[in-house]
Length: 408
Image (cartoon, rainbow, N blue to C red; front, top):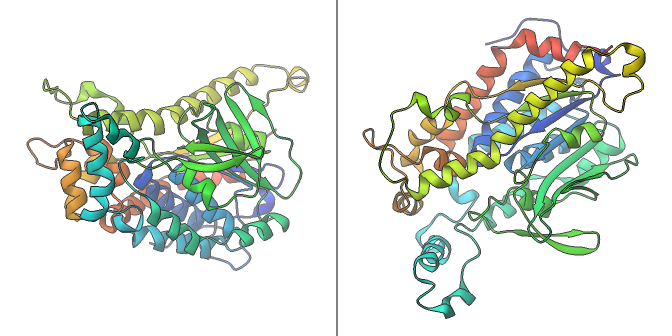
């Protein structure tokens, strides 16, 4: 449906750089594309050629890092970039992200499960154990063919974007790393278990950030001249909004991938059976991907409330400053949506996940949380995009007010 209102005027937020936070979530990240598609049309319904990228700082974790890099690469043509990103997610298939054929799964998934079950009987097997449940080599090929990092460098140089940040977790040190690239000089910061690393971002950083623990293999990345084996950027992410704030954002636009009622088990029927590996894995991933961002948004709101009580002269002397936020999250359960599309997954992959407890049976449906992260099929991602777009368009007034707001 066409949207009728005045187009976005970039000058209204020139003094208030907006940071975009794209959280993790595997296949759930297609929802972010839908939200952004709706936001772009809210801000510029006529799709004017001179429309400016509304996000000065972009920060992404896990699959959100891939979306963040894509947006940065097309910061000079936001609508074109959004359309290409939407086409990519709308035409995705599982084998474009990880090997989902029988041969590939035998080399990874079944060997991995076999080593877990019987490795103690044959210690020699441990020297040949697979590194992860799934092999995401196809994802690396897809990213290399899709993203133009030279264009990102040019967009940074021409101020179409101020900075791009990609987060990952170093298994070797236990630190949460923020790799960032900016045309201007930004001093790296360091906090407890958190470190910022200025660098030239590439595919290796995206693969590291999106390496879901146990499911995808760790990625080697250079940090300070040394090799660090890194995994998913949502692990140990104590303050997801922190990188954007350090990089200069005065307002934060957050796109989450968690439905609020997924965290209220009292609303569901109690199952007394022992949980399957799929159920346990799904809850573990939800804890990694969904909990930290909601807590960070709540923490930011409390800080803003406290700062609002300070007189202006006292506030100016403080190191803290108010940061306005707007968060959009799914209005439906993505777990339930994923199970409805389970049959679209390649048979070999479907069989593997059924072994560990994923089922779309209406009487005993289970494993929806796990499969919602790994179901890279067009029917599912297209529905996520549609949901994200509908959720953002349902909040037109809030979106317009957020981008036009000028902090005091």
